[in-house]
Image 1 (cartoon, rainbow, N blue to C red):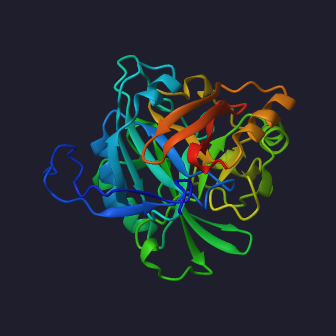
Image 2: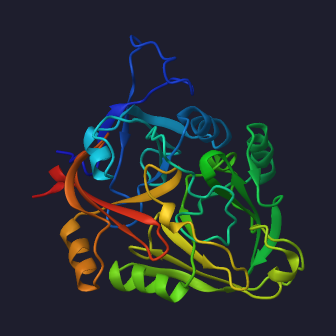
Length: 356
């Protein structure tokens, strides 16, 4: 018997961005959303709080080329989990592949006093989640399509060398302070796969941090994550980079980075960067629902108690203590939330029927 932790059958909505446009009588096909690849390995989905499901859904389905995997109302327990009114909220779950992690969940909390987490923020402004990171074989085409929907960037697409690899990158800036980083490998070239003609599924989420050592302690010591890669990237080219950093600062100091995930072969990771020599502000205090932007990364786990124990051993109190909620379409789960030193929210959830 297939457990819900491994596979959830749900309706695939064929409606366009307009919420009410699909006739109720149209039969809905079935699609399987699989948690197996992410369980104890990486984040399954990025949660984005938005003023308008339609605007971001249009980007992710047309520019990115993803599909709507599920559409419905959040269980009232979700609002209560975040300390919000216990009521349903409209949600859309979008992804490039229902069998792989890197899904995008859009939610309308419709909170009148909410703010945009990274409104007017620059990449060197720390706190929360800076972007979700994707790959493409047509960055210029994606850039043009995104601009047609009103998106912008911190710079035009920029080419640079990262060791032996030649890359092209642009960080797309959309509504609600949502950023999507697009990476194209110019050499050696990636195969012309169908999912690279627009955007491949998100594989990393980027966080700009104040202190990389402190961040490393959180992910490695407290959470037990692995270091996938780390180092300092020096760009010899005196020109504004993909982050829009002024040319004189680009060559003044290397960009320090570290990538963390629950295990080495993780399908989704967290990439943290520290931009020395560029002093910004912190938006971490605002990086929580119902405020708008990329508010959380959700990790499925087989043993939530292990996460709780590790946090306690390192003197870290969960932002939201472990409790039972209904996370549609996965069903009943036990979940907790914890925030990184710079305010990025991570949620860990254990499907209830995955227990022995």
